Each structure stands twice: as C-alpha cells, then as structure tokens.
Image (cartoon, rainbow, N blue to C red; front, side, top):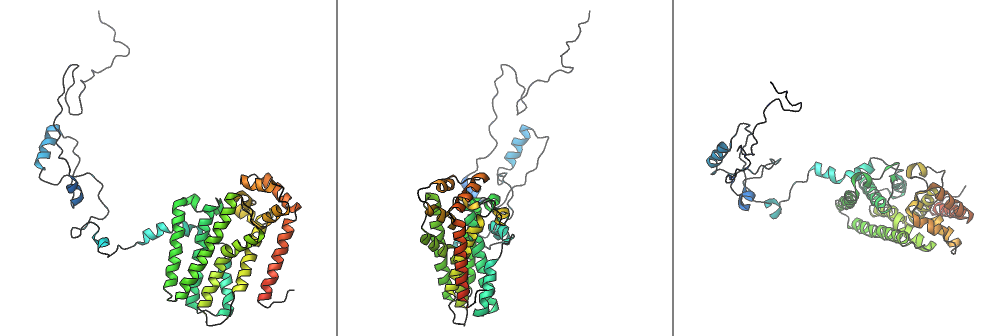
Length: 384
C-alpha cells in the first residue's frame, strides 16, 4: 500500500549544508579552519606602494587553488583592493614634495567653482545694483580712468554680495531677492567660507592696482562694517533697544561703510580734488532708514521678496521699531513681539498697528525727507 506524500514535502532532497570553504557539515564534526593565505600588510608597504597588482574575478575558484595562487604571488606586491586613484602618484617624487619645497600645487577651476558656489548662486540673482549706479553717478565728478573704475566697481560688488551671504546666516533669513538664501542650499559652513574667501579675493584685486592707499581704505571700512554689524547683532540677541544716536552710528558703520568704501577708492584713483564723504555718508543713512521703513509696509515690494515684515521675524531693532519703543518705554508689547521672532502674520499686523498708533511711520517718513534734503544740499540742488 503506497503512502500519500505529505502536502508540504519538498519535491527534491535538500543537499547537505556546507561551510564557506566547501566542507560538508555534520552534527558532531569538528571543523579545523585553514590557515590564512593573506600576508599581513605593513605600514611601510602601504605608504610606499607605487603600483597595484591586477586582480580578476574567477567564479570557479577553489580553496586549494586560491592557496596555490597566493603562494605563487607571495613575492609580488599584495593588492590592497583600494579604488584606483584618479592620477597615480609620481614615482620620482616623495610624499608632499611640491608643498615641502614651496613649489605649490596648481589651483584648478573646478576647485574654484566649488568654493564660489554660494557666492555665484546669489550673484546670479542680482538686486537693485544701487552701488554700481552710485559709483557711475559719482564718477561724473571724479573722472576715474575706465580700467581702474572697473576694478573698483567689481570689488564693491564682491564685498556687497559676500556681506549679504553672512547677513542671511546671522539673521536666519529665509529669502533673499525672492529666492531661498544661499545657506539653505549650500549649508551654513560652506556659505560662510565662500563669503570670507570673496573678501580676500577682493583685496587681492586691489593689491594688483599698486596703490597702498586702496588697501588702507579697504581695511578701515571693512572694520567699520563689522563693527556696525556686531552692534546690530548684540542689540537683537540681548534684546537691548538702542538710542536713536547709537542706531545712526551703527548704520553709518554698517550700511554707510560700503558706500564710503566705493567713493573713497574712487577718490584715491582720481586727480579731481573733491571730498564726497559727507554726501555719501548721508546717502548711507537715507538708504538704511528707507529700507527699514519699507520693510514694515505690507504694501511694499519687500513683502514678495522677503516676506511680510521680515525685520520683526528677525527680532531687529529697526528705525521705526526703536521710535515706537522709545515713545512709550513702559509698554513692553513690542519688545515681547521682537523676543518671539514670530512668523505669525496676525501678530505682525498687530505690531504694525501699534507702531502706527505711536506715530513711528510718520516719524520715519519725516527723517527720510530730511535726509533727502541734506543730500540735495550737498550736490547744490534746489528742492522742487
């Protein structure tokens, strides 16, 4: 009588289990591992290696064949199985010989492109280009030779763009010129390094002009720029409301610094004896206070480029904010809103209504008109 097969029985016999070396395993067998056929690789071999042995994959190898092959090639250099380098090391030079002897290593365009990535990203989305227009306007008086003016214009543009990269990191900004800030694309570390690199590339361009006065101006105004930025950050992070006088000093250092830098560089390269410093310093104040005013206007183009009242989200003590706080020092509403660094649009609109009730926007409009009048006086224009 035949026995029906079990419904889960395997149709084929299961082969005996083997180890990775091909030895058939038994329940009570003792496996003696074969001695290693690999020769230990010394540090000297690893560092001094100039050639690699070629290896190929053989699917039909056996343990015995592998051992025989290893003994046959024991006198040859052992492969480390590391990836082949893009360019093999030179047999005629020691490690780092070029650097040790001061010959240097060629800097490639590819490496330059990597370092300038964050800078090029922002530079590719230009802003209002006010500084270039300012340089062109002042050159009507100063008459700087074309080639020299081109270098100055490029240097000022480099410094401005690089400073914006750092500003966006320090202010935790989201948008710049209507696009995501560079550090949200490239990361904070690479963005800061790119900005610092461009600062020194700008200095290098000025050095090539062989005018020591240019380097002196560059150093002085870059120090002023960082002094102004440092105080601005301190007030924000310590929640300290500055006086109007302190704020104007900060603006003169921070915003006015790059304007002054441009015009001072032009004056150093001009044969025309005109001191434009009072005018350009006034323009710097006007530019920043106007920027503060427009940033807090919901109807301005700043909303689409930077978001609604970005200065409130940053917790920034801008010109209208300082006026509103100083107008009623006992009221802590605005201070607390700045502390929250809110993104809530309803809270921001409430802050705007509060500032409006204190006459802060009317006050800033008055100061803007006053500074505009001073600019016109400096150039001998009569107000219409």
